[in-house]
Image (tube, rainbow, N blue to C red; front, side):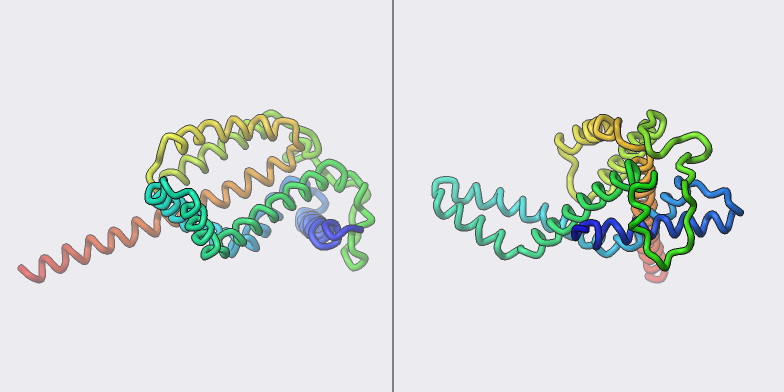
Length: 249
């Protein structure tokens, strides 16, 4: 087995199988893999939170670096050698951002490959030999139909439309909460990204899209929590000012 299979695919594959087994025990044998995927995604996103927070900070720092690069380009437009050196120095002094972004991208690619394999061959039996010996007994065949309607191993247009709608909602909310000014490129991506995602995911297994939907809903909940936090602190600040004004009177 390769490193990808041993270190990434096999542990998460077993986690998903274990969640399915737990649901099966709880429901008296009426588990479906869709529910397991949703719980699996929530567990995964909780484990992912440190990287998500680091990526959020990195996005802000990348924006600041981008602004600094623009300033450097204006300042040294007539000095190409100096311009190149200044940009290189700026990049060198912010290696942490590059490293965090690279790790985040690498993990996302690994997750995409993992999920594609799980829902195309893994859960149909091709990877049953990767289930750990100490795992509880698993059924010979998993229920791969979510809500008695959606086959998770094949594309599904309904799931794809839901996926596109959730992506649009997440992008809209992300843009609304972004501390950076919204430009023309951001407005275009608000529509282009969901349409591109619709095409990209169109022929992927529904299970993969269910994972994306759940992880985006998780992100939306986090963003709404952030919004409520901002509203709370702003309201408290206003109340303090009002109270202070009344005291002075």
